[in-house]
Each structure stands twice: as C-alpha cells, then as structure tokens.
Length: 79
Length: 137
Image 1 (spheres, one colour):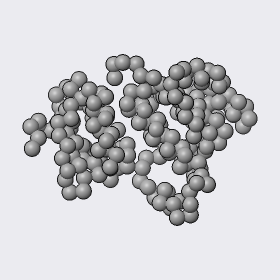
Image 2 (cartoon, helix red, strand yellow):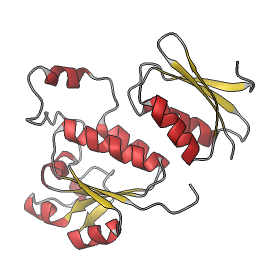
Image 3 (cartoon, rainbow over the protein chains, first blue to last red):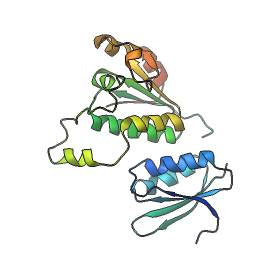
Image 4 (cartoon, rainbow over the protein chains, first blue to last red):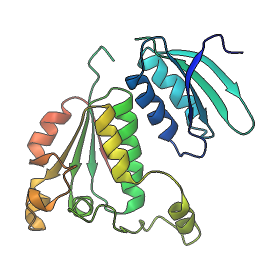
C-alpha cells in the first residue's frame, strides 16, 4: 500500500507512449511540492520511461504497482 | 535538470507521417529528459510543415508493407505535430527550416506552420548541434 496521500489520479490508460509520461510531467509542473500523483498506464513504455524521468527530474517514485492490465505509478513532487 | 545536457539534433528529411511520428517521439523524449533539441527541416519534411498542411495525410514510407499500413494508421498515438508542441512545452526545442530547401520549394517563413521557429543555413544548424549527436531521418 502507498504511504502517501494521492492528490490526483491521472488515468492515462489506453494512451500511447509517451502520453502517460507527458501527463505526469504536466501534473508535476502544476502541482505543489509534496503532492503525489497516481498515474494509471497500460503503455509498456511507461515502465521504463516514468522511472527514468523521475530519476532525471529528481522527483520521488513512491510506488509502482501492477493492477488488472495496467500499472500504477505513484510519484511525489519533490522539488 | 540542473546540469547542462548536450543537445541532440535531428535532421528531418522524410515527409511521410510514419517517419515524422518516429522523429517526433524522439524529440519529445529528449526534451522531457532535459536535452536541448534542434530540428532541421529539409526536403519532404519541410513540405509537411507548410501552413495548413501539417495534419493533412502525408502517407507512409515505402518501408510500410500492405499489412502494416492499416495497423500504423489505426494506432491511437498523438499526431506528430502535437508531440512536437508537447516537446516545446516541456523542454528546449528549436525547429528550423533549411534555407536551401525553402529556396528550392519557393517558400517563405510565412508559408510555414508557426511551430517552425525560423529559417537557417546548414552552418548555423551545425553550430547549434555543437558536440551533440546529429540524427538523420
């Protein structure tokens, strides 16, 4: 279970690569430091892209969790 | 994205929707990862950036087989022009038209979609590319 409170769920299921990542970037840019976002993605590219972007942008990947045909990426805005 | 990254520079030559889409994915990915991106539009790619023509059907390259073509067309991904807009929104992306190709097709910058930032010669493009990679598509 996630230990952070999710501010907003970003349902990007069905979006093609790099759509889910781009939605996450938009949410992080508009959000406040400390807020967490749960990105739902069925795009296989997200599994590599979201962790790579989070590391590069020095954000915080709280949780990656498989669900029924998609993956949750919980990302906290760290800066 | 504190440290300055090396730029990546893409020469877009092909004007078919599949190659433009593949190139736009590279641009948006590089921009998202903090790399400055230079795009140089030549020949058929430049033609696809004419004002009012960006979302027209630019066909597929001859690489696409008869079986692949409908699969590519049915794919729900964003249009390449939308990906380039997203790239500009998240990063540092400079799209320049090749002066030689502009001359060849008798184009002025006002004939181009506003997503194109300007017109420049090849030496200026190479100056922007500096010591980063140059990719030709």
